[in-house]
Amino acid sequence: MRTHDKHVLMCTGSRCSDDNTQLFQQLGQKIDARPHLKIKRTRSNCFAVCKNGPILVVYPEGVWYSCTDEAVLERIVSEHLENDIEVSEHVVHRLGTGDV
Image (tube, rainbow, N blue to C red; front, top):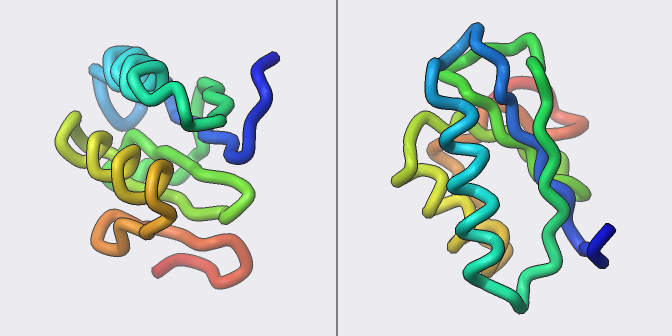
């Protein structure tokens, strides 16, 4: 397992979207293209929220995103994962605060 500072989990189930697996693969490519990032990526079958899914969760922050397409995914990677700036308009839940 690679050394990591953040753990990103992404839904790849079929309940909320048909292209979750493709987005998960794109997430891996975006992380690999930034070798300075120390990110662990894990797929999940379903988070059982399906609010404009697929859902992407970033830990240790505990931020849950609605990651509906590659443009949103790119923003999450470049803003949150790379620069620690939350992409607030796509947040659906925060650890400890409930739905937003």
